[in-house]
Length: 120
Image (cartoon, rainbow, N blue to C red):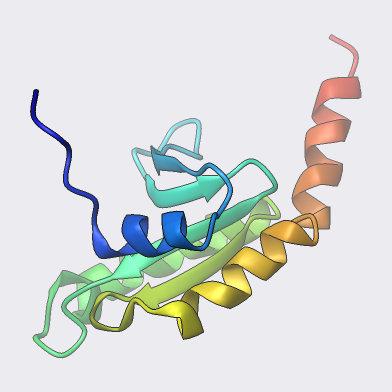
């Protein structure tokens, strides 16, 4: 049986005993946007690659598309942490871990409660 290889992020998160995260989480009802990682407390993690090589995310169109996506996250009360792919280390991951341990996004949790309590 083949063993799945963990990414550097997954490996360090596991070493940190980080809480379960949902990979490739689709957060928007109509757009096909996905988050690299999402925690149920309203914390999102995006691993940003190709920063120095003029990748899609650092060129005009990709940069503007990311701004739309990130603004949609803010509108929903989701906290976004952006981690450069070439610097996945404890210095970048510790604040994410700490934020989740403190309860994540209060705004996100409040919005979820409002949705659940809304009458149909």
